[in-house]
Image: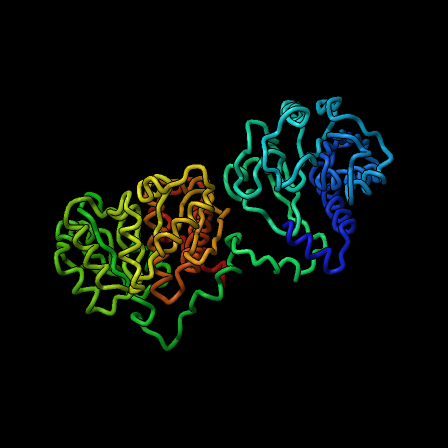
Length: 481
């Protein structure tokens, strides 16, 4: 965003114009979201965030609000655009140490924005703690002070917990990655007049996961097509008592649009499957030869391995065969490569397999072992794993990150809380496979699957169990037509 601001100014939009528009967006959000708030306390920092706060203070006062600005530092010390905006403010300005948030109806946090790099301390920390303790609603400017805009993590022990946030031009990762999303409250994204060329110039590779990102890459069924032109997915089944996971994946692959899906595994597992599925085909194999011959001889371009696969020698033998067969692969969990990501990378390096991995945090930690950098953000960790392994990584959670080896990443924010249920991840693996089978590229297929997964869960509502999800996929697909 610093680059965007600089490019906008170089393109002829003054910094004062941008700041005036930003402050107006804050004032608008304060009036719209907190209609009953008449007494407003603005906590203003010593930089441009504080300048936005001074603009908001002036506009709110002009509309009849009782506004006080509590400044961190001296008004005379403010420089540049922030100094110019402070000079236009003629209302009361007090030292931040004298602020009494409990006496206001609304607190506007304009202390520090997304670029803060050190923990809050001293007067700033005391002001933030007082604002949080007051119980009054807090409207944050850009991002809650004390929260890292790149990671969503608190920078120290003291940070604002906002009821709402106003940010500008584009969201930052910290607005959608947890825990930052929780600290931001409801987020308004304001257009403050930055030219489109200025926004495009930095070449951002991180995206909010929305259909606009991947819709054009999801193939439409052709009236001239047939089931095999829509892709055939093979799903490895584990033992009978763990077979539900692979059934969920197989059914979801069909619902996502794959033309044919076959579950492969030992006879006891297939006997259990036969009592539950009809459209999904069944094929017996013990994982020692039958898996590779099926992949090579039945126009199977996509395979899923991991859901309920089991831990004995047969699934690992089947996986080895699948790697030799090539194609498109969805690998769930740590797929027998725990603490050996380089070995997995070596298996994929010849390019014969286009792979998508779908671990949750625990599986990711097992897969990456000592390479799982706990200090890095979820976005950074997913990107690093994608680059190392040479696969698209779906790091699951309420803020699922999809990262491609080329650095592109999407962050999802549409998963309802009740999607955290056993088997939901198996459905997601099948969704990814169904889209891959139809020809969608890995990053787009994975991002689309994650979004559809969340929308399908919303369509079911509270009380959701994983068995409900495949049946709700058509309703989610209709949202992108």
